[in-house]
Image (cartoon, rainbow, N blue to C red; front, side):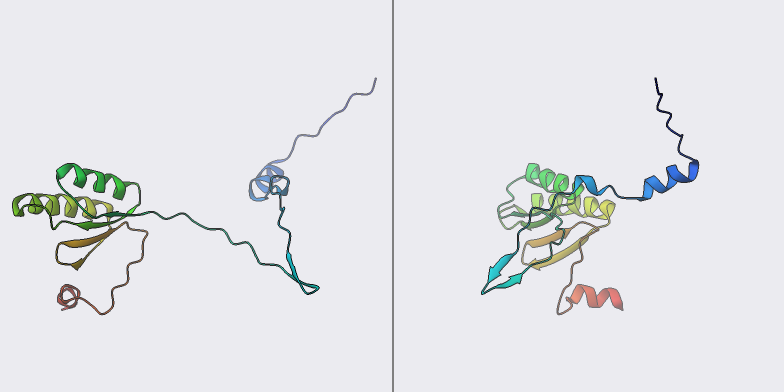
Length: 138
């Protein structure tokens, strides 16, 4: 009987296997569209999912907790705090400012009592610069 002896991979072989991609798992079943005997193929680009949560009516502190949990999960938040009483609005703003500070996110006031809170990985561009941003530059 013949015995199959398999060589042990060397350390260099093990390291090389870490950095090589196995193409066996990728299945490309894309068929190009045809237009008047011309083949048109579109390149497939990877897409990344990004979540934006719009909270039109923040009514109480529990809604602020849901906003904080969304920020912890990397979701951008747009808040309308116009329905809150001034005391509760101050508590919610202070709480969310603390959460945003810990998450190193971006905070922008979009309008009266409407705020955009974005996680650290989101790029927020404001044009033209708000008076608050101008004050920070001075």
